[in-house]
Amino acid sequence: MMNRLAVVLAADSATTVSHWNGGQREERYFKGANKIFQLSDMEPVGLMIFDSADLLRVPWELAIKSFRKQLGNKSFNTVDEYAKEFFGFLSDNHSLFPKEIQDEAIVTSVGGQAYRWVKAAIKDVEGAGVQAAITAKIEAEEQALGTIELFAGISEDNATKLFADLKERLIEAATEWLELFEQPIPDDLERVVLAAFWYVVKHPSKSLSTTGLVFAGYGDHQIFPEMVEYQSCGIVGGKHIFSLKEHEVIDHTKPAAISGFAQTSMIDTFSLGLSDEAFSSMMVSANRELLEFANTIIAASGADPEKIDNLPGLVQAAMRKIRESVLEQARENHYVPLRNVIGFLPVDEMAGLAETLINLQSLKEKVTKPSETVGGPVDVAVITKHEGLVWIKRKHFFDPALNSRYKLRQAAQIQS
Image 1 (cartoon, rainbow, N blue to C red):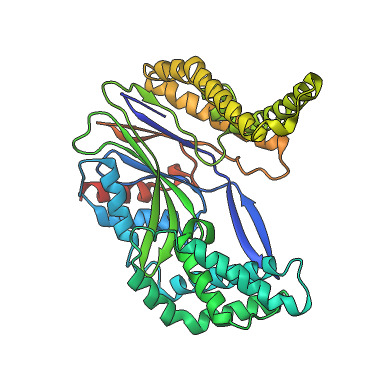
Image 2: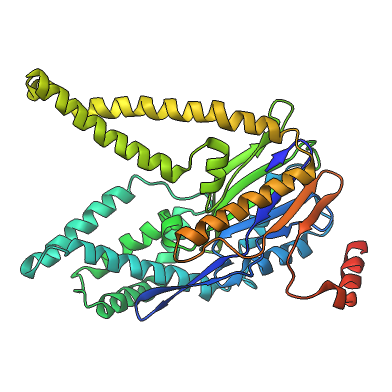
């Protein structure tokens, strides 16, 4: 949440840790995670994370604090430049991300993708048609991959070299996956593995562990705050892969902004008057009922349905207009007035509002879902141009009052 005075970052403490056990994905939920961090000891910039809590088994907290130490007194003109500096720190950082760990993530993902393709290809096929079905599936995937560009930061030459270096391990991993789940080995397994490798490289957000990274605060040349959201898609061939998701900048014409990440139904409801889940369900129901209504009218009038070209297409066109109208009214009647109010909120009230929205989301998860993916203590931080990052609420795994030496170390670090 931002206005011309400050940025407010608020996050719960729930985190999900997943691992594979006997071919099954198992999840564990914990409620002590730190998701908000001060990105610089000297400058008014913060970073909030969501989704995965680590990158290649390295906790994001460790990577962020290592970057903060290396950054020192260095500053940048915009918040987005801090983000790019951080991504550069993650790339080619073999102390945090050894090559063998990077390769292992690729090998595991490629093996799993090869297995999923084979399983899908032979779902309804038996006997002699199995190998032909696999070949047809791979040909279709190869054709689809040919239309997709590589992510920025991954060159075709580097990807080709990476495949050559890992080819034997990739084939071995695919074989292990197929044998484990009792699937047939394709006659041309190398072709399947090659296609699976390019799928992983071109679809890292679908194949590798992802984390949302929200950078917010002020650059040296910024009077009002900026927020930029990226999705981290892991590390491929030593390069950190990321994509831009959202970018908000407060200026003289834009008074405020409010953004939700991960679980957003409460924030959507608060800012638009309805959640994305409710809106989607409403549109599905409206589409079905509108199509049935059109068929009823045609039947009642005695008209010939065959003379109406593309009735479903006409219904879809009407649904697009309905969807646009509903969203426009939600924006005009809810979001714009709310944004204008947030634009004038004092900093403490904005922090209280952000915390309340997180608590409402936590309550909703608690009473509607068997597993609480939002919960635990809520951390709230405010970033202003001149005060920097200030904690409004913050949990500790230790009692600061019992750790005076910790406070002295922190003070000495800042002074140096």
